[in-house]
Image (cartoon, rainbow, N blue to C red; front, side, top):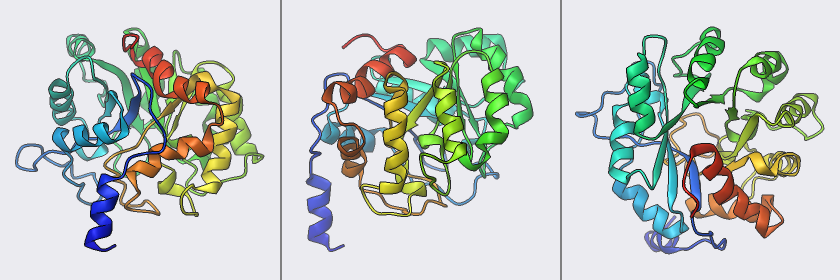
Length: 291
């Protein structure tokens, strides 16, 4: 891409006109390494991703709210995530953190007061919480009104369905089920995911198609799954950019941020449903006030 093309891309605005209160439900922040230490379990070095840079992107998208998710790069040290949430402010930001059995009730209360609403289980390279602790921790955070946010290879869906169904409270599955190799909507593993959505306790993030898709934008293979998810449970769909796209194993390393919003025009046919995904659903799950 030439310098002129890069400038044009940086100035381009989305085709999708976001409604008031629109929320990006999954991003990460990465601060200076001298201030925030990268965990040895993290493969590769994440990009610097600041509050200032993300605010500029919010202006381009027209989004007003965001959910900051603890990245695997910092393991159990949530300080960068919490600092960024504080900088954004309580009207703008909610959070999802990573804690283990050692966390105290007082610490959980402090997280909640600061805007945290979920516990992340990242079952990919770099994750630090094991499957074995999930039922125990899910029960604990359910008592304080948090949900579980879960990411794993969707190819394992049939092996994980019983575990997920047995969890108390709400479970949010990342990235359209995160099938590392996209499958047909008629695949029995994907059908098992749709069945879980119909329980009413499982939510899905329409996010990260560039990580797994074998096709360029608008990511037709992942898009077929996304459209089926939207048809099944439009009231439990969330949109997210996954900015700043830190996955070193993603098939497409540098996705276009504007396209990641505009893909909703491809995946969601009705304006009212799209508005619900961008505003009402995240407001319900994360406790944002009505815009």
